[in-house]
Amino acid sequence: MKSKIKPVEKIRIFALGGVGEIGKNMYVVELDEDIFVIDAGVMFPEDEMLGIDKVIPDITYLIERQHRIQAIFLTHGHEEHMGAIAYVLKQLSVPVYGTKLTLGLAEALLKEQGVSGAKLNEVHPDAELVFDKAKVTFFRTIHSIPDSIGISLHTSQGAIVYTSDFKFDQTPYGNNRTDLGKMAQIGEEGVLCLLSDSTNAERPGYSGSDTVVAYEIADVIGHAKGRVFVACYASNITRIQQVLYAAHQSGRKVAVIGKTLHKVMDIAVRLGYLHVPDKVTISAHDIDRYNDRELVILTTGGHGEPMSALWRMARQANKQVNIKEGDTVIVAASVMPGYELGFAKTIDALYRAGANVIYRDRQVHVSGHGCQEELKLMLNLMKPKYFIPVHGEYRMQKAHARLAKAVGISEERTFLIDKGEVIEFRAGAARPGGKVPYGNILIDGLGIGDVGNIVLRDRRLLSQDGILIAVVTLNKEAKTIAAGPEIISRGFVYMRESETLLEEAEKMVAAIIERCLESYMLEWSSLKANIREALSQFLFEKTKRRPMILPIIMEV
Image (cartoon, rainbow, N blue to C red):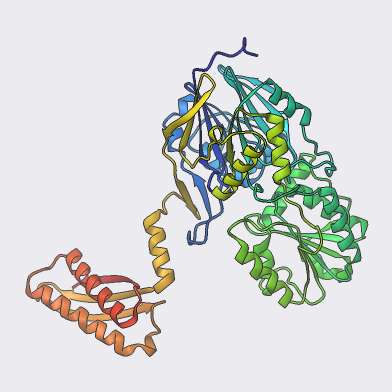
């Protein structure tokens, strides 16, 4: 191996996303001047990101060094790891490597975004790619989507290994297998640095087997007396397959609801990763033609997440089908960190609608991320010299660091990095290597990056105390007020019940404008600033609220 690749003097590793957060995974490995990018994921917005659809990493650092990028590697088809690939390839013309299913899902994203001419290269887990300063190999992992892989960059200083999302399932469902032998071999040859998934580092034990889940789902569907709703992530192809087989065995038809779910299933069927039994699926428009005992409704949300569609169904607000008394609902998904409140409200709404909800009392879902014993097994297989916990919030990274210490990796050889923090390796020794630019790019509808902190601040202000608009028309030549002022309130106070307050505000605005006109202060910006400042103080004294104040001045 070493005869085929050139020696590396300096290695730099950092994350542009995926640490201190769930999602938005993007990791960069620099071998001297050569750059390798691993994953390009999105993150779904946090509560304070009002109106935002998705968040992607800021890749300014990569754009400025595009000529040095050798490849982008995608580990699997979940959006947290490859959902930003279309946005990235709009700005970077570099080759992309991934397995068959991963590239199939990536192609669909590229087509949606109108990106053409992408250099997509299919790799097999047994493939080897030789670059100037690294040989890149892959190893199979088990996750909640087929064709998941880990990546090893073999360098003259040792291997840099990225596990991506993984679990160890001793009785895996279907044809999923873990390359335990290859992992052990990589560890024996020498791992300089391991980057490993921290999502379930706080959970003791093992994550559980999908084979058990298949039995539980089949049992619930087989014994349910009415309709069965199954909610799962659109990308969880393993769970979708289990539902299809269970419905077929119990003589039920499956209606699939959700555009994202249809898209993922079509791709998986076309590429041979999903088998749909003959005549088991029906159109959602044909649901009323069947008895309740003959139906399974498979659903997911607008972004491929499970709960938003269920929420609408429970509130009788779905156009196609809604929850009613006697339905059974299987929630075959775990709640994402930060979305616990919405999850709980949806479960409550399902019960109120009369459904029998199954999500905790039966093992109808297991995580695709390894728990503590599995994470320790990965550490023991790889035996890394240095360790960087990734893919998780800080507390998860910290918990993973404690596991590493338990298996013999000292605190000095474990780095808890934040986005942009560089770890540098020279002659096999690691040290902090400064920082690189990083950040979030917010996607709102068709807008990419045009919504920033100032816009979000305004949205938060509007959501908290509303808006108050002061409209006035001036005769600039006569230096008089031609019409107004008129105060309009939205989300601040109810105008019919606050007439006295608004009349006082109108008189205040009129007095301010008259003073400005008398002193020849006719600049619109100065007039607006004076109105905004005076109204803000007045309204806070009267209401203890701070609405957004928008003065509108017109001239005749």
